[in-house]
Image (cartoon, rainbow, N blue to C red):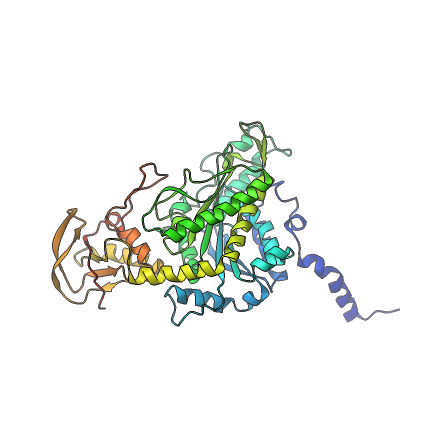
Length: 489
């Protein structure tokens, strides 16, 4: 009997589409997840095929390219109802921050969680984990996931540093044996210079959030400010013998970080601890990783109203696929993936259960910072006598951070302020063409963090950089004023 061709097509599609529609990473990759490192093109391909087959619950956006031409992606997950009105949710969130016109709708609070994976390319378990995590969030076969995503939007960047990630994973596949060598002194655990940590220009992208010197950062900031998430875990790795680290962070915490941000960090940390305790996994908190320097993947979101956190899994460049650690145990890539998956889902869980509190405090944060700046200085004046090229460069940077500024518009005299050049309090004269950045604006905290003459340390034991004022960095003549001054033009 002859079967019509159209019926054959329907039969073939019906038989095989369901299998292709929900391919987990283990079915898509030529190896089981954790057995080998994934080249970036396969990581990208997996997200593309998953997005094509789960259009109701997942969106995939390309937001740019690296210097070496690799794509930068964002995967967005939520319930089908939320995905259908995703633009409405995004704009409403910006309205709460005062960054979009209109009155925000507070009747249906939606928490926004942004997961940043492997900004250091040779800390690859975040990117490896992203595939399994994406499958879990897109298919929503777990009833808990399905429930959490009813009031939560999850945004995931699978690889913040594709060039560094590919440099490391390619070297691993080239240097390692067919069977993993767990000896930490073996070649596959001794990555050569320059390593996969930095990007194409060997720049550490985790120190670039505020300065935006690299193309990956510049393109990421554009989409970050289109969303302004409420919770932002930055997923890293550390030494092979360290337990897992998660929030709350260590001191010093910058004085501009609010009590709410500190409290919610602890709430997420307690939930992470509960899951780790249930699995008998080791972890630590409140040590080493502080929240002071504003250009990390945890502090930059914090200074923009989010709950910013660092997650650190043992492994990094020396982890390989499996390595023997100091206590005699073997740490595998599969272990590292499982730990990151757990903290990521735990973060989503807490964010969903506290969605109303997150949204309410996010809105209050921006209302308060716009009308009641926290720091001692209420305005920063850039003299018109400065090199115009330096001023232009500064303005371009402020544009990237959505910081508002303008000309004074009228001459003023007898204004008391701090003179950056002399380091003293003076009585200043302000010219009409001087540039002024008021602290009375939505991104007030970022303004104060970047422009304050000297940040106050609560503890001298810091993880990294302690001085960064943009005025000194750009070599500008400027004043910091303790009274309000708004641009007139």
